[in-house]
Every structure is written in C-alpha cells, then in structure tokens.
Image 1 (cartoon, rainbow, N blue to C red):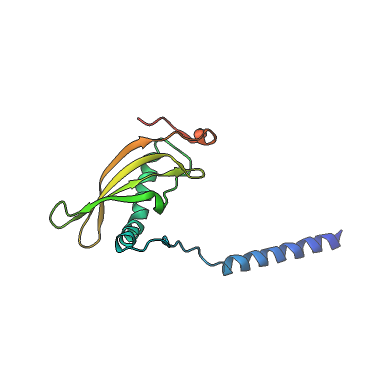
Image 2: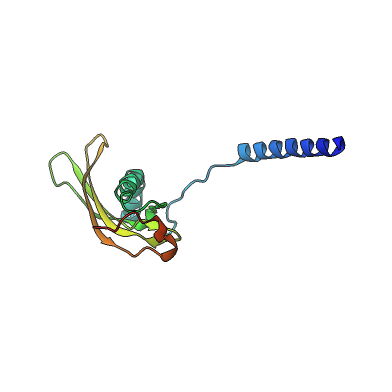
Length: 149
C-alpha cells in the first residue's frame, strides 16, 4: 500500500514539474498583420485598426452586454475604416465599421464607431451606431439577455 502511495506522489511531483516547465518555456502568441497587404493605404488601414482594436473591442463588449451574455469577439479583419479626416480644427475623426462575432465566426451585428483623436493620440468615442442585428445561431441563443431594440 505504501509502495502505491509513493508511486502516486512521485508521479504527481513529476507532473507538477513538467507543467511548470512547459508553462515557463511557452512563447507568447504574437498576432500578425495580413501578409497580403501591399499598398500603403492597406498597410496604413491595418495600422490604424491595430491602434484602435482594444478601444473598439471594449465599446462593442459594453454595448452588447445589455443584450448578449456569451463571449463576443472582434477580429481586426472584421473592422474597416469607413471614413477618416479632419472634420474640426485640431482633431482627426475616424469612423470604423465593425461586425462582432459569436461562436465560430457568426456575426452578431453591424456597428459603426466614430472616434475623435487629438495630436497627442488621445482617443474619444464620438459616436456609436448599431445599424444591423443578425440572428444568433440556435446553439448560442441561451446567451441572449433580451432582443435588440
């Protein structure tokens, strides 16, 4: 009986040791840009989206949290720049279209977010429009809190 306990304890110590080493040696996943982007405009759009993706994701998650409790994903390839320009002196305005996803790439809706950026890079959400709602797949309908208005 003691022999089996000793074997189990040794195996558990080995498992903990291996798990620790695997975790410690794991390299972080680095997101990459689209390898097919070649023009200056495509590359610039990708860069602008990358600089805004955290802000966009935060706003999308906050908006949809009233309607949907499941996990919502915002992928950079589902975000496009609708408009960019200087609409008021001293600021740049950027408008994005976003198709947030649920499950295995099922669009939840279509939204447009407008930001106002100053010369220091400070971003301010200037507008949010939910323009379209898509039907949630049956297997994910359990996460619907209430229908969209």
